Each structure stands twice: as C-alpha cells, then as structure tokens.
Length: 392
Image (cartoon, rainbow, N blue to C red; front, side, top):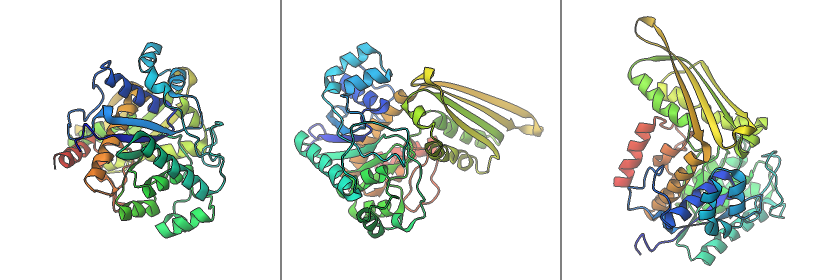
C-alpha cells in the first residue's frame, strides 16, 4: 500500500485543548489549500504519511465539539475556525480519565464513569479499537496533550517492571496516573505513543520495557517549543565560543488553560523539572544561578511571553549580557510538532522499531532514552540525528 493510500488515526488525550484544536484545524486547512507548510519542519520528507491522511479523535474532560472548543481558546481568528469548521465540528471528544489527585485544576463532566484502574484501561483500549475500525485506519497513534500532572514517587516497585505494573493495575494502586493508563492502553493496543506533556507516562521503567517487549514505538516527554527551544540553540553557541554562563534567569507569562493548570504547585513542579534539566547538559557544567519561573496571567491568553536574561563572562573576565524576549504563540509553536510526531512514530512502527525512539529527542525538553542515560539536548545535534534516521 502506498503512503498516499494509508490512513493513520491520531487519538489525542486532551483533544479539546488549544494545541490539539489548532493542529486539527491546520490539517483541515491544508486539505482545502487554505494554508501553507510554515512551521512544519519535516514537510520536505515525502516518505512519511501525508498530513492529509491523518484522521483525528480523542478524549477530553470537556465534551464540546472541536469547533466550539477552538472558538473558546481564541488561538485562531473566528474566520479561520469557520474555514476549518466542518472538520472540527465532526470531532466530539470521548469521555476521559480523570483523577483530581494528579491534576487538581483539570475539571469537566465528560468523564469515564469507571472507578477501577483495570476498567479504565479496558475502556481506553476499546476506544482505540473502535476508532480504528470505524475510520478504517491502518494504524492508530496516541498522543498525550493533556494537562500536566503531579509526579508520583517514581521509585515505587509498581513502576519498575511490566509484571509489577500489571499487579498494580489489578490492585487499583493510586500510583497509576491517568497518563499511565493511556500509555499502557496504547502500548497494549500496539499503538505508538507520544507524550508531549511533562507528566510521568511511558518513560517509567515498566512501560519502557513493555513497549520494548511488544515492539511499540514510544517517545517523549514535554514538547520543546518556545523558551527551552531557544535555550538549546543559544547554550551550545555560548559553549562553542567558550563564553561562560554565570546565570540564566527565565520567566514565562501565559494565560491559557496550560497556565491555569500550572497554578497548582504540584503540576508546576513537574513542569519545572523538565524545563530545568536542559541547560547544564548543553553547557557541560552546572549553572548555579539558573532560575525558571512560570506565571499564569489571564489577559495574555495563548500569546505567551518568554523572557530570558543571560549573564556571561568572556575574554579577560569581561562581563556581558544577552536578553531575549520571545513573544510567541504557544499553540502555534506546539501544534505542527504534534503533527510531525504523529507521522514520525508511525514511520518508526512501519519500520518495526519499537521501544524508546531516541531520534525524536529533537521535539522534547526531557527526551526518553533506551538505557535511561542522559539525552542529547542541543537542537542542532538532535536534528542531525533525526535527519540521519530519516535518510537511513
């Protein structure tokens, strides 16, 4: 079967969110020739499944169809939403897994009415299979775009092996988060899984091993879109010129649902851990005065401001500063990366390459690795690795 004839389903956790609705609107606009390929870094790779062969569904705590959701998020102008309206309105979110113990600020009435973990897993798997059959899909890819969860204790025995994880499911162990339910359901449905969030998911040892055993591609975590992407460009440049980074102060203000979720201290802690690990690896030494802040500021909506102050020491001990003010559109940066990831994990599955997909580290703040080792963070090196994999 040619790539043009293949149909790949993208089942999104958080399908009613700003990133997902923006991504799906983009595909609808591509179908009618109403937009170009700006922002899609691998549009030139013709061996991947075409963008217009992607079909969407997914879960969300809000049951509104995606046209209503897109208007509410305000990322796209109303006329743009209307142009993509038929395709967006056709997608109604499936009931989602909810657990306020993991994400206090994520609320909604569109909830799977099942309390047992095993029952929730089975329900999510049945959704994946129903989607596959109803749309005549050759493959389903699951992408997690849900709100950031607090991290559990990652050292607990239940998260270390597939057997222990199975036992924890049957025991309704509270260590199993909603993100883990989706990841496990995807892997055991032989559906490639992408974690675009900072939440603990397919990167725990039990699920990494299970994905390896079943030959299912998994990738993540936490999409690298704005400020951290800039950090992984600038820090290697400073290192290459032997400019010593004395301090790096980063702050973000945003007013979308992501920002509101991060008002919860536990969710914020998960996010800061993925944002804070990049700089030292890029530079090769610890920056003692590395500060990262994220503040919810409602008037800004999806138009995030990411501001950096960098203090440097150069030749003869002379002090310098670099200041970067990135006025970015959060969902506009993230949505095309989600589309590329769906195509790329499908390609990995087509090649029979299961387990952690290290070559996709280009997209993430905290890329997962096969052996749990330190990932590469420099953006230019990550792109070289990915392009080499695509060319192989």
